[in-house]
Image (cartoon, rainbow, N blue to C red; front, side, top):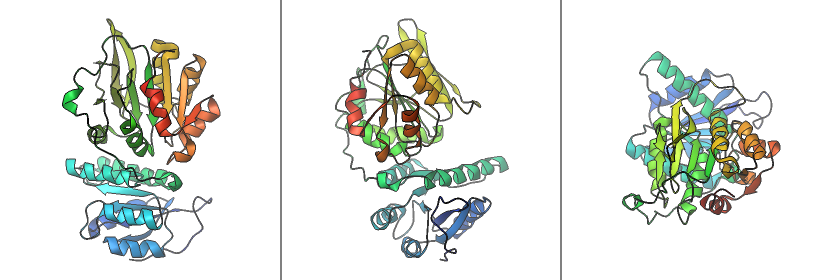
Length: 363
């Protein structure tokens, strides 16, 4: 294990993001080194092929972000993450093959303080590999901006309500209101804190615009469902929405409401290039205000994207309600700060947002 030369603390202007790679595969370490070395804003601070070697190396190097292989012999990725968070917390990205079992372990890591995860790079085509490289570099850059002071271990208890008992929970008919939740970086931890704290299903539908790819969203919903006392669903085009249910929209999709007889459906299409000012969260909030007016509740959680600001202004204009996660508890507070700068919004701890969403209906 070797350390790169010392540098000033990031994000000082001109300073590269220093990444430490941990993987028990020499080949994967070299692949990731090459991926990062091709980016002028990233420097590889060091590599390690075992948990103990990683702990020794991290103690000697100045590091901004580390990538951790989930499955390693001896000290595995989860155990290593726990050591890092106790000794000297820093943003960690978990590397996973992302099988069903790998997904569970990866989401466990998010409870222990990991910021995000990515699938091990694999080459199905040249374009596919280039897309993976770009996504990996972007995840590292976003992780480098995370506030580790907001990282917390999440102790979750399994929900006593099982999926089989969810039948009949949803309210039929036209909803009286809707809650729309927007999040991106740091959102996994926020949602893993928020939904398990509910004491009853929400009165009205909840739509979550999650800043995660559709290929991971189904895994996350399955994981989160085990700790949540009401149904969570991946929304499909023309789904009839019901109170008492939370519907998830991926970062790859655009959604809007459409009246269907006495009920309401969600139209879902693939995301196309949108303007810098308006994204999927904005478009859904515009649609929500058209159908629910002041019965629209917009909730902003941890995130580093500025999408959703135009939507917040529209919710404010029609006298809907806007709440944000308290900035000092966000792994990435960029989104909530942007909302609070743009409109009047109430701020609260995640447990304080639970009754707001749970009891929300048209005022």
